[in-house]
Image (cartoon, rainbow, N blue to C red; front, side, top):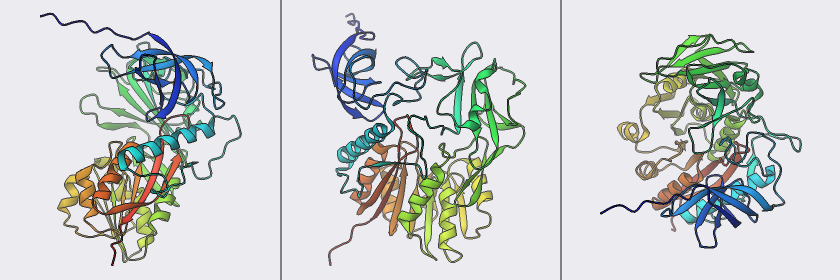
Length: 442
């Protein structure tokens, strides 16, 4: 028996009314035949012509780009970036929306995920429904925020630097990135030839003048002589084991938060927005209200941002345990917090290390898990430790909502939730939820 060939719908065009925003930087629309479209470059309430970019006759839904705007929203603006739009760079989702509209759309996504996955309204989550800019982050009207202190450039076959197109390995060659921080732009990555390189990451530390470039060669590719417009340290990624090695300059950059300096080595993780670390640290500390002498956990602790803030506040009679899987991040965290004798940093996955510690109770918990969330097993373990408050820092509202539901199963409710627009022009948003045990009657 022969298989019936599946007909691709890529390139098909539909005139549609655009419905609500969905998680992921697109809006939902339906064709006259009832097919669901996830449409990028559109806004709720618009009438557009949508061209299919992914999908077949048998697909549950289709992905599409709005290529013609027939009836624009009042929130629409002309995308300021020449590399934004259908078929172009996939980095920014909302270049075509006013800043206030971008934050409203993100708020609608958070509310939808909370209701669908955790069964909570904004009021029940202690959230006023707003998405706030980063601490002290104000811009003149019409100015594009230059916030991205780390930019990963992909190199095309001709050695030109660019950014990937949406859901594609194709490269959109650029001559500048409008949301790149000035410290990244001043390196001039886009102006030079990167033959034999697969990618180039540019890092401009916001807490210092440190600049760093991380080179990933193509298989067999030789490292170029790096001559950029500003002094910079250079690292390379080993093609065999993925390890990061110093070529010249420092192997780390220095960042600042909570009046402390943090060493971040080998291109390791630090919040990308220059004001994000301080904003999130304040939100977590204000929500937890640490007291002298308390014990605390900092899970997925990175280089020790929250562990340091906690240690400072619980004092010499308190204690903090941080757990982090990355070897270099653990080394940095131990260095960064060496002046706190009551802080211990353990390396390994949280779900493996935490049970081995023998800890049965703790006063405070901070967790900042990867995009997939902490998961049911870890959440249930944490709920059994009896913390008076838990701070959950989340870069994905769906994962946050799922884990909030797991916490609810074990007797924890959301006290407050705050949302921050730390990734302007994109669909990404950061949330801080504060949870506490449900009070039992009697």
